[in-house]
Length: 114
Picture 1 (tube, one colour):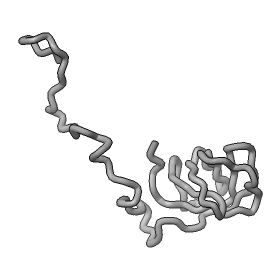
Picture 2 (tube, rainbow, N blue to C red; picture 1 turned 180 degrees about the horizontal axis):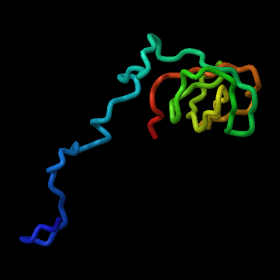
Picture 3 (cartoon, rainbow, N blue to C red; picture 1 turned 90 degrees about the horizontal axis):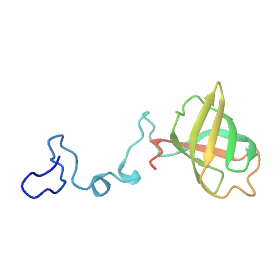
C-alpha cells in the first residue's frame, strides 16, 4: 500500500505477520518430532544406491516427504524427495564421496527447513 502523504511504499501488519520472520522462526533444536518419536533421530532405513547427491534407501514407512534426514555415520543432512513403497529417495546437501550401500539413514520427524 502507498502512503499518500509522502508517496512511500509501506505495508500494514493487519495479517499479523512477524516483524522479523527469521528472528522469530524456531530453531531446529527447539522443534519436537511430529510423529511421536521419543528421540530426535532413529534409523529408518539403509542406503542401497548412491549417485552423487541422490541416495536411495530401503526402509521404514515411518518417514515422510520433505522430512529432514541424516545419512551415514557422519549424519549428513538430507531431505526426503521421494517415497515409493519401502524405497526412500533422498537429496543430500553435503559431500557424499565415500558413501556406500549399507550406511544407515536416520529420520528426525522434522520438516526440512531451507
